[in-house]
Amino acid sequence: GEDVEQSLFLSVREGDSSVINCTYTDSSSTYLYWYKQEPGAGLQLLTYIFSNMDMKQDQRLTVLLNKKDKHLSLRIADTQTGDSAIYFCAESSPGRSGYSTLTFGKGTMLLVSP
Amino acid sequence: DADVTQTPRNRITKTGKRIMLECSQTKGHDRMYWYRQDPGLGLRLIYYSFDVKDINKGEISDGYSVSRQAQAKFSLSLESAIPNQTALYFCATQAEGRTGELFFGEGSRLTVL
Image: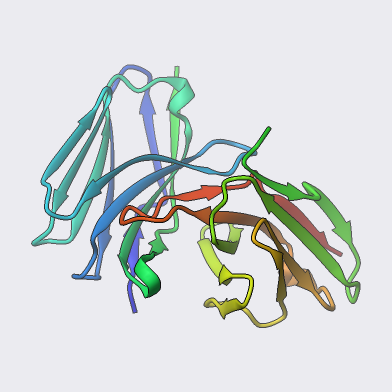
């Protein structure tokens, strides 16, 4: 079945860039997502990229996709303490009735120190 | 008000008790999910529903059951709770369309003693 792998923990200093990496196995993936979970809260969609794109930039966030290697990364520029959270990588593949089925990684805990 | 609301937010119960976690949504989405989150294991899918008459098992459905009472309501039951069902449970709805974005509730923390 589909699998999504990501490292479990990343620690950076405030002001540095953070890079969270993810690999996936499903070659039919159509969209790849980054979700953010803050302490005590549910997951919220941070950004997503369509599988025919290489890069997507949104303010401090840069998503890079290497479809050949099935590798996705999320770069956060000028990381702030408020960015401390768990970041989940997810991929979707076509499912029934026009809906996509999402598979999540285990999440990367990002800790930003002052 | 939250678009996806879960109740209760926290529950402590004893082994063998029946527990129901409820989820309601105002987003008008047909598809709804129940996940559990455990440290180091990420999110695992328990059940999902396309609509009121369509219920599907996820990867870890054993020990759980669900009921889709209406488009807006999807409840998860543990008929006889056991300690390894201690976890954080999330309900989510899914938008129509190709991106398939999921919208999550804030979670229900269940502790089984």
